[in-house]
Image 1: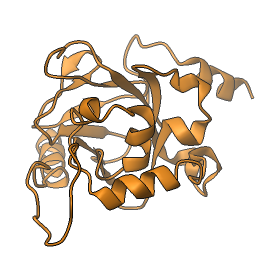
Image 2: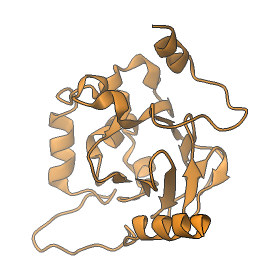
Image 3: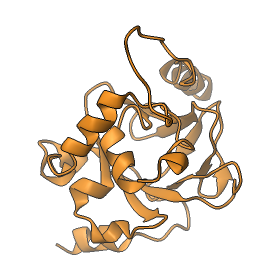
Length: 203
């Protein structure tokens, strides 16, 4: 009964619409990558203005995604605020994609054609309940979870999980990779801690 209750909670929490339906808002112009022209301009203006997630209020217990690989650039040479996506808020449910986080994806994937491989709403993360985190793929574009294709039905995510964005021509080789980080999550069995996590524990 307990397992059934959790499964029902996960299904209810992860309910949502697919991202590949356009609302068709009148008067809104879209670029080739599906972002509005205004979104791209705003993203370019705000690249240096984002507050580092580690310095935000309550960020110590927040969930955040850290980019560890991006084709054509070295994300580890960027400051944290430019390579991380901070997911905060009491709702405990977040959608990640180029529509919801345009600044990050414009910065990490400057090639517009490659950026089209990232759905406007690519995937959803949700506590179900904390500290169990589940991921559900929303878009039609590829997503790898630790090298395995993501499910549209929802799948568990542990500390240190790698999320890879792939192109249709290379579905098994991600051009962009994020690592899931949160002090609320436990590493998967047999998984080694990232150097950043080891340093935090030593401090």
